[in-house]
Structure formats: C-alpha cells, structure tokens
Image (cartoon, rainbow, N blue to C red; front, side):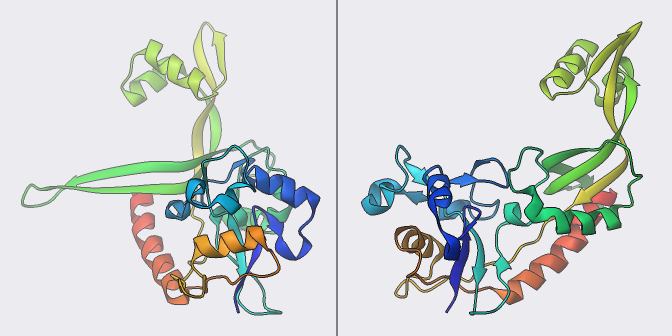
Length: 260
C-alpha cells in the first residue's frame, strides 16, 4: 500500500525531534519558507478549525498545506517525488540544497552555460503571448515558466528605459525594488541586467491519484493521518498516465511559447 515517504522535507521512517519542530512550522526546507502546497496542490490546504486534533500539531495556524514531498507506492521501491519544490529549488538559502545536487549537475550539462560566470534565476515567470488570427480574433497564450536562468551584462539605465517603455525614474525604481545593482558612471547603469544565455527550466513531478475517501487515501486525509500517527497511514497512488500526458503537452506548448 502506498505511504507518504517525506513530509515537509523529512522522511517519516526517520521522524525525530528536528522533523517534529519543522512540522510545527509547516516549513519547506527546500524553499526556506512555509509550505505553499507545491505549486499544483493549493486545493489540498486544510482548515484546522475543522480538524482540532491536527490543529494541536500546528500551533497558531488556521490553514496548513498538505506538505507531502514524496510517496513510496510499494515497500522496497524507489519513492516518487510529487512536489516540484522537493525536486528542484534554485533559492540560495535552502537548508537542504545538497539533496538536489544530482539534479543540478544533470541540469548544468544540458544548459551548456559558460563556467565561471554569474547567473540569476527567476521563479514562476509569467509569459503572455498574444496574436491575431485571420478572422481578427485576439488569441493569448498565458503560461508560467517554473524558472528562467539568465546571464548578466552592464546596460545603461536609459537603454533599459527605452527597452521596457518606461521613464528613467520609473525604470530606476523597478530596478531597485527587484534587487538589481545600479552604478553611477556619468550616467546610471544597471550592472547585472539579464542577458544571453537565457534558459527556461520546467519541473515535472508525479501526479497523485484522487484517492479513496473510505480508505483515507486522499492527499489531505493521508497527510492528516501521517502527522498524527506517522507509522499508521495510507497514501494515494501515482497517476502514471497523467504524468506522461502532461509532460508531452507542456513540452510542446511551452517550447513554442519560449521560442516566441
């Protein structure tokens, strides 16, 4: 029977004081922030007002996300990662980045980025691409890329202002708000403006099956049981077919949007 393998970044079969303390905060050690449901599981948030026993495990919280990182479908088999934060996080301050070193090494092989340079990463970058059809109907592709990685170069603030169609004052404010480095050399320059190479990174993790309410294998129920009694709970299965279907469709569509 499927079981939750990792909860809020910690293995349930090695649950200890550190894991319990982390669980109280509903903390994601990969994002170095409170668990957000993993990007695709926002509907799995649990209202603690209707779960008094569970509420005792999360003092001071009203809502808690079902912080399931991975599942083990059968004893002895490799676990399935079901949360994109668990698979890869490009945040600098994550306390468990060593868990993801292998993924990063594989990623670097495919990105073909020159070594020794500095790169910046942006998470959940929205791209809205519009076009007009032959019958003059407006069509939009509105997608979010998991990460965009880019190099950097020095660029005059005046040039950036023209590029984004804003005044220099507004452009300076945007740059300061977003942590860019500005330097005065006669005119104002942005020292680390994004430039080639630009790499789009998409993260695909396994989808869970809907689960059985009577067997308490729905994700929220499995999470509740695992928190209250880690050794005695059942988990949802893996929706293998949807994993492949989503992977292929997103590869095609997001590649087209990325090229555009």
